[in-house]
Image (cartoon, rainbow, N blue to C red):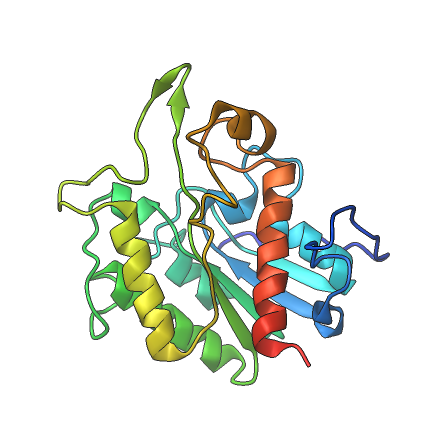
Length: 237
């Protein structure tokens, strides 16, 4: 069984930022429970703080973060995002992060009618179905991957434009996920924007994403801010 991680800050604290910092004043203050599933980014690998912890600071509630490093969305075992959804509790808000691991493992993008084991999109629909089963009234937000430029020293290992053996880049998987979100009428946080993440630039990596793949504390604040912005646009009153 997956280990459930709870980050429970009892006191809310204001976060520094400019006029576009949605973390300062947020409708999420009414959210008491948040469930997060995803891969190493949602887990917060190589960061002292993940976006779920930022969200908890402004809700004052409980964040159940079951994200696992290296997790596929497709059901390849207990660590998969699909399986993570089976272990979640009933929450007010669910955040499902897309992953690059299916792309890297050459898992087919697939289609709506596929099973969770057959394809990335098949697993996406099945995972959303499970979240709705847990709480039909819950709000669901889907988060994309970021641009990525993982490095070996000064050598670029790959980029988000690199094609796998199926001939698809990470952009193809995220485009399919966005299309599925439109079909399901789910809010989509698009982190694949250079105005947010530009790991091709050394100066950006140094400040927000040192290895070109995993955001640091400052990078996670960007993600949290975007989640709150999209929440406000779709669920704010």
